[in-house]
Length: 85
Image 1: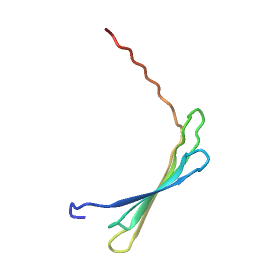
Image 2: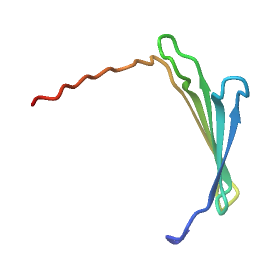
Image 3: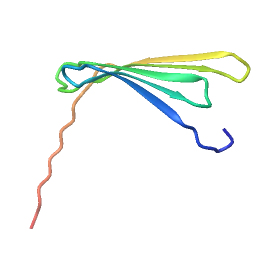
Image 4: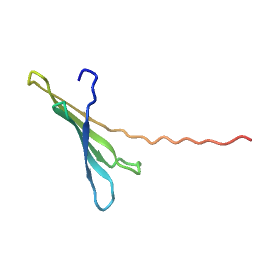
């Protein structure tokens, strides 16, 4: 607010066997709200990808604002390079 610092906190749910991050929740010290991202497997992608993001905020007047996004159709892009002497 008013251009000041905004301390934040991230809590991660991690699979103890694989070390994969399954979910993250971001909250702030001076904002009533959160962003939660859930991660999962996608065909052909060797790492977890964001599957769903949900946002939830309470305004100064007490109104609740929410939003949700789901992700699909993941593609992996490859590049290459070579050094020319």
